[in-house]
Amino acid sequence: QVQLVESGGGLVQAGGSLRLSCAASGTFFSINVMGWYRQALGKQRELVATITSGGWTNYADSVKGRFTISRDNAKNTLYLQMISLKPEDTAVYYCNADVKQSPYSRSDYWGQGTQVTVSS
Image (cartoon, rainbow, N blue to C red):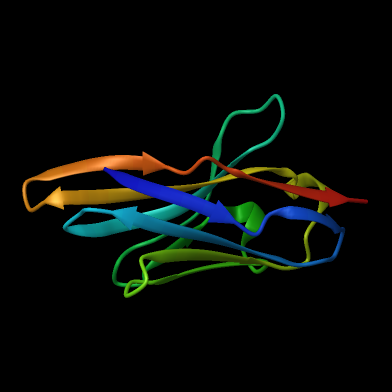
């Protein structure tokens, strides 16, 4: 079993910055792609950014140039640095990981979410 625990959310004024973290723990063989998703009130969950174990990144157009995803493979930790935050970035942010429990089995895991609120 794998646990993903997010931290770093909070309330910030527009134009401010926040850094989210997601620590993975448990027993597993390796972690492939990790990502951040968000869900605003009344809206569907959407992709924010993903990163492979080799460091290749992908971003939603709405966050390009403002958000930076990174990971520390030795610590099994994922980060999201957010700058120039806008009120429309307000959402619950979820960490996601594609985990190999063995060379032959993979599962998808989600964290419990962390609230980010950007005031205007």
